[in-house]
Amino acid sequence: MTLIDVAIIGGGASGTTTAFHLANKNKNVSILEKNISPTERICGGGMSAAVQNWFPFTLMPIVDEVITNVEFSWCNTDKVIAELSGSSPFWIVKREKLDSFLLDQAVNSGCHLLTTFNVVNIKMSSNIWQITALDGRQIESRAVVIADGSQSPWPKVFNLGPRKQKFASTFSGRVKRKGNLRNETARFEFGLVSNGFAWAFPLNNEVNIGMGTFLENKNSIPVNEILKSFLPDLGFDPSEVIGQEAKLRVWNGHSNLNGNGILLVGDAASLCDPFLAEGIRPALMSGFEAAKTLIYWLDGNVNSLDNYTKTMKTKWGNSMAWGNRISQVFYRFPKVGYQLGVKRPTAPKRIAQILSGEMSYEDIAKRVIKRLLFQTSSS
Image (tube, rainbow, N blue to C red; front, side, top):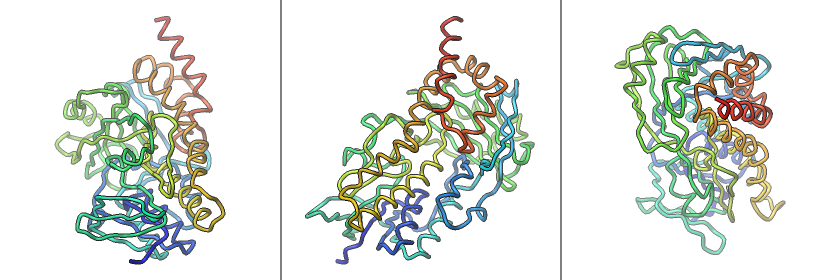
């Protein structure tokens, strides 16, 4: 059996990003994907244009819409519009197009793709990882990257990621026309979803529709009820939406993302933004940083992969710690949060800057939380 450098479990955005950067540096890398080919993956599809910095090729061929305005509302009224400024706008993509595009880049750079490889066992023997598929196929590698999404069982198996996983309950759907959603405009609705929000992101002649709750809630989202309230304002009928509910693993505290020759990326690493549910940017960031650390390690320049966890804490986790605190206060007192956190003259611009990657939650959190707590305690 041939020993490879890195086996990547999962061919989504984070796994393919990792694979591309490794293959681009002539590492022997394989993606182990349980599906035959990329499937339709309906999600918000929003990402900061700043992600372009992690790739030597342009991502514009798969960008459906460049967002220049963000519209906020409370129960479809009391609307506020923020204009995105600066050099990093907000992009909307079809997730399946993004994944397929990055997979092509990885394969063209020399990465091997093994499909219908449904991983059932991962174990280490004499510092070599052995990965076994349901059909009996085996791969041996020096390192393993876990990139198989929010439902991955492997973080728990290897005691990586948050000790207590936190999940957002979500619904993601798509409408096959634009309705009356303005071009280049993303919509966030904060009044209709308990402990969360709904969104509408434009694509080329389509719209991604979604909603999520971000505080622990044992009850399921009343999807149909919310769609009946939200969609008419966008010019749609609820019957037009094709979608599904899912649990999305979100950031829940600083945690170890690597072990001995193994690391987590993307949703498997619980990196999704706990306030605005942004998942693509941390997926691509983690893939880039994972590959960088693995290259140093494979070349013998470092003895462990620990720098990956440290880097993700600094570049993403510290901001998410503040985002988590904002989320805990905002979604418990959403009406107050909307009045004080969104309707303030500078607030929409700040949220827009967070979406575009120009600011972090850490930059604004102390003032926001202090304002929210003061108002809720005095009301």
